[in-house]
Image (cartoon, rainbow, N blue to C red; front, top):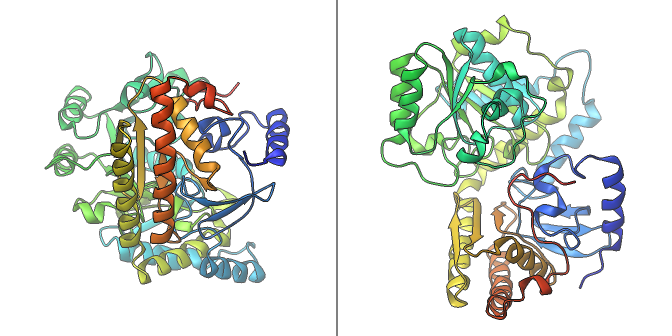
Length: 439
């Protein structure tokens, strides 16, 4: 077993000072295997990570939760950021980079005319919802998919057992969300156009927007997105695509460009800045101008680093055709998972768009199997879990080495399943399911 003493000590320090250990649920050690997962890094470059104890890994896991689309510490992006910092990252005047970025985003998405910025995906979605509510003078949102932590979204869980759990993710607690928002967020499932149509009929004249991810775990069925667009047009409801996760994966820009359906607004973050904080809300001019009728303002939305990083990231992304590389790498990993699982008679279900791939064990002890897989891969110097987010820094050699290591891990998993002693082999704790809280 690798030595991660310093990382464990840091986790204990964090437990005393930071509720939940991490600012981001998806980076909590218990999401992998608490007691095994290192949790903290000293340095990262390309697809490589060094933890606090100096252990070296190839990162074939979550790629900074999808934020580092080019790879860690990309030379071109970091060089642009350093130059911006030298010039002054903020001042009493506005930086010209935000105008240049707005022009570029509208060039990539010709249907869009205007842009507003934030620094994170969740807050950008909250901005988008505020704008469409101001534009329509309506309150209710029909939505599909995951859209962050803000009140407008978690309101779906008010007055119900677990609407979001039934729809997508269990355990998204709504404590602290004003009860007056009950009934304002109305979920429908992906590829179930009939559910959206029922919402539209039931809440006729009350919907401020239809908010959805254009693609996530599954491909859209024939005419689904076209049907959503039709419903929005017929009822005069703005259509908002959440591209926080899907944007800059399949192509340079929103996935909707590949899928052939344009929204009225779209929201980007994560991959757009290659790990630097930046988010953008783009849309048709008439709708975006409604931002002027509501108070939407923040000092840190005007700093220079975010827009500079986004410009450098997008320009390199387009020049290198990064989307094609991400798709190819992701497809190869998915094929590898299926191959090694079949070879060792371990049942798994593979899902997700290729650059944001996932697999799950079809076994009653799937969380223990996940933790054991994490453990076995760490011992082979890979950061790995049941998710893989591809980066431009990932090479075919990385993938070949990873699949070979996964093959060895699956052989051990199969042996543990046959012996019925999965729990005894764990050096850490089983992975936590869903969005269960760390106490």
